[in-house]
Image (spheres, rainbow, N blue to C red):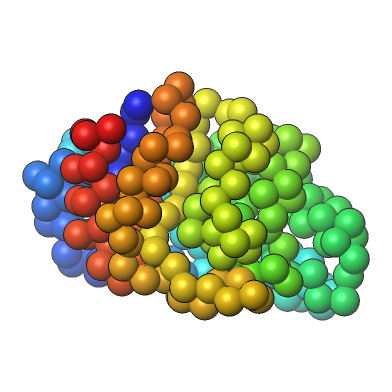
Length: 256
């Protein structure tokens, strides 16, 4: 089983390269840069950070800002959402990231079918922009943890099929949304060779996700015991203690 583990955070620019060196020394081989409140790395710094990550054999990815709704009925908000994702892809090209993860949007007053079409068309337009600019990162809508938010297993799987975009399987969100892990359905719906994944402990209610929590050891064991053996998998940990949880996942993976 080929799994890269890493945290959902690189830290401030001034500490980025030293943090990557620490991750490398620990044995972590992935890191997701949190642009969740905006792109904070400039082009010059991005090139240096990307070069350091390559030297240290750490695969970088990006989480785009939270303020995204590709199904917004307000065209200006949809346009701004696309712009935020494209800004991540643009700087991600300098960072040499492979994946830009984003929350696709909300159903709002739209029917699920209409929401899907609106988000699909927005992704197709972004794919065209990425191709025109010869940018390398792939955009990846994420499975979501609240039942009233776009991002079911089927919806994300269908987007990957229909637009040839990438995807992010968030196992914690799936547990919160469905109240079960759905490992067999995930394997069926995502036949692709590479999986970009998120994982952590999670608290949830009938409505779905409440908050991420420290990842229980038993939850790691359940996940690792159910992952397919024939894929390349990246697991980004999003718990409040993402470093220690990533280390725990790495250690447990060597026992499975």
